[in-house]
Every structure is written in C-alpha cells, then in structure tokens.
Image 1 (cartoon, rainbow, N blue to C red):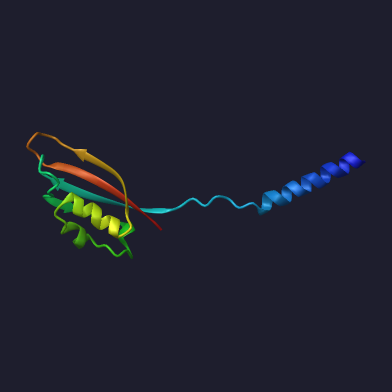
Image 2 (tube, rainbow, N blue to C red; image 1 turned 90 degrees about the horizontal axis):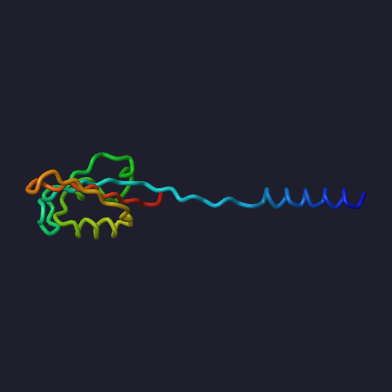
Length: 111
C-alpha cells in the first residue's frame, strides 16, 4: 500500500512540474531580400539596387526608395545595420566575364 501511495504522489508531482514548465520561445524574424547589380571587379560600386515590395517592409523605418539610392555595398551594409537589420547571407550570379554581377543580400530583423 505504501509503494502505491508513493508512486501516485510521485506521478502527481511530476505532472504538476510538467504543466508549470514553460517552453522555449522561438524568435520570429522578418526577412528582406535586396538585389544588388554591379559591374565585375568594380570594388563594391553599385550599378543598381532592386528591391521588390515585401511584407517585411510594412511598418518599418526603411523604404525601397532609400535602399535604391545607395551607391556602395559598404553603405548598404552600414545602412541596414543602423536600422537594426542583421546580414544573413549573400548569393551571386555571374554569367560572363564582362556581364554585371547579380547579388542577393538577405537581411533579417526580429519581429
């Protein structure tokens, strides 16, 4: 009888602990893609920036116009850093030696 009571109390205690434990909160992010077009071997000078309308820009302090006016990749990274957007990844596509380089910069910001 004593072991059954001990097991029952232990089980109830375990259930109480399990229900009061909180789960780890997974951070949610907004992601933004910025397309940068520049000439090959042009030391970071941007030919053009293209930003599509994206849901992650709604209600943020940065605008497509401000992004498309940037002239150097270092200025783009500094601007996004100042607006609290974290650089995540960059992918580039080069088709021919003298063709422009298309780069996709991905940034994220906590919601």
